[in-house]
Amino acid sequence: MATRSKRRTPRPLCLTDHPDEVVLEILRRLDIRDAVCTSALSHAWRHHWRHLPVLDFRDCSFGRLGVASAAQSVLRRHLALVDAFALDARSPPLPEADHPRLDDLLVHLSSPRHPLEALVLKLSSHKLHSSIFSHVKLKYLDLKGCLLPNFTPGFSGLCNLKGLYVHYTAKLKHHLNSAQFDMLAALISGCPGLEELAVKVVPEVAGVTLKIAAPRLRHLEIKACSTGWMVGFVSLLPDLACAKLQLPFSAMLRKGGVKASAYFPGHFARGGAGVA
Image 1 (cartoon, rainbow, N blue to C red):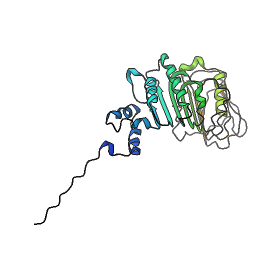
Image 2 (cartoon, rainbow, N blue to C red; image 1 turned 135 degrees about the vertical axis):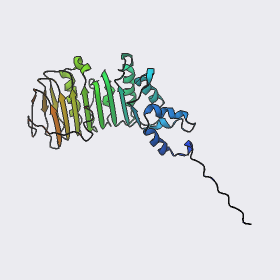
Image 3 (cartoon, rainbow, N blue to C red; image 1 turned 120 degrees about the horizontal axis):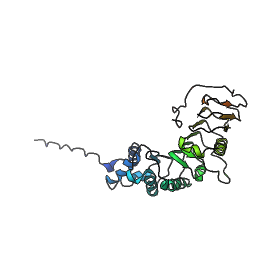
Image 4 (cartoon, rainbow, N blue to C red; image 1 turned 120 degrees about the vertical axis):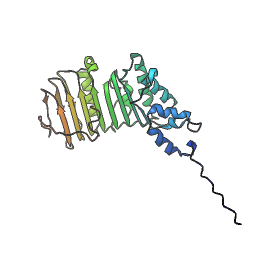
């Protein structure tokens, strides 16, 4: 009588069977809080989250700990290079006592070991630390509720920056003046490869001229509620593909091929990211 062959039941996959690149892809699809919690799944998964290249602290709650404290704790234990960092501390608003924590975060991320290419900060009201100008590899910078600091000595610009989005909120009203917009203009001119620019100014700030020198600009959007606002284009914009300018009762200066009354309907490829 023939011996009946034994069928071996395949062993189900375990958490430890996945290669590292698959594990990181799984973690990328979780919010940062859940990604950190996977360290409790097994000993093998204990440190996987510490190798995430993108740290996104938006759309998740950290309770009494607060988003700034949580981000600081994560960065202290993080092992890999950080390519992108995003933080939203508007709801609840970042307490005054946590502002130094945010400055420490920016200083930490400005280290040469972090080749930061994307930085998103959504705040109620905060003057940024000058270390933000040390992120020379930045390609994307999105700031909301933030005041630009004074430039550090020797600052030569962000030569790799492609997209700049600045949103001045109502809570910044008493801090906005011509000096702030001069710094914004200097930042724009210090980004020779800038292709996308969006500036939104919610509070009334009269008598200000924003000078834009960005010869490679392709997408432009400016929204301002103030009367008497002026935008001066101090360089030719030969590559400009679309622009949206909303400047009520304002005058627009021109130099070169941009007409004072120019209005090009359209939005950025990202749907107007950075000005929402």
